[in-house]
Image 1: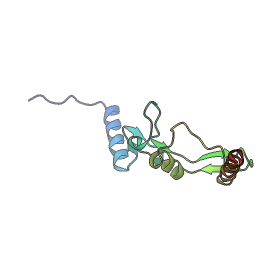
Image 2: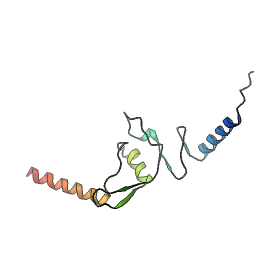
Image 3: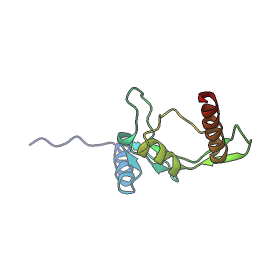
Image 4: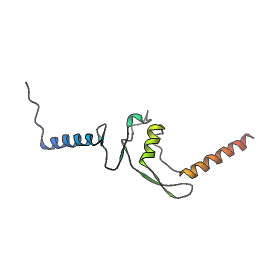
Length: 116
């Protein structure tokens, strides 16, 4: 019977690190998830023709284009958008919720006016 090849110290450390990350739930498809990040599931994301997937999510700060107020798109909101609602993987937030609702209402009113 043939003995398996001996691993170098660096290789042993790498194997041990990956094993610990896997136990802690910080390893997704071979990618190490940074501390404080929310792990993603690339299989649930809508990315038929893209090479980009989210293995993890972090809070994103952005400024609303309507009111100019600093907003936060939380990791939990991103996960819901990309994995449950199957949002386009390249989309990023531009409008806060209030401004978005106002814009949609204005669009609806304009559409009704144009049809009449």
